[in-house]
Image 1 (spheres, rainbow, N blue to C red):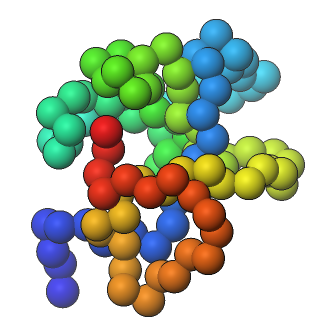
Image 2: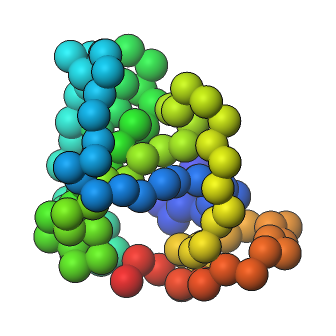
Length: 111
């Protein structure tokens, strides 16, 4: 059954300053989508692989929270990421069976 309301189990992301991002290869295989259908009202630029469709990065210069930064999808990294999550977003939409035991700062949506 399809619902226009998304629920989420996990999407692990990393953030960095935009000028810290360097592509070593494959940049010519990326496609861009300006997402205007968001609950925050801002329009993130979603950049994904044009071959497999996987999300790679997101930027959003309209968002005070994201401006000047890049959101990197951890699934596109070559090496296993070694980090400890600090924040959770869209907690209002998480699936009922998800019970994260980590101490994180929690947000109901995107601030």
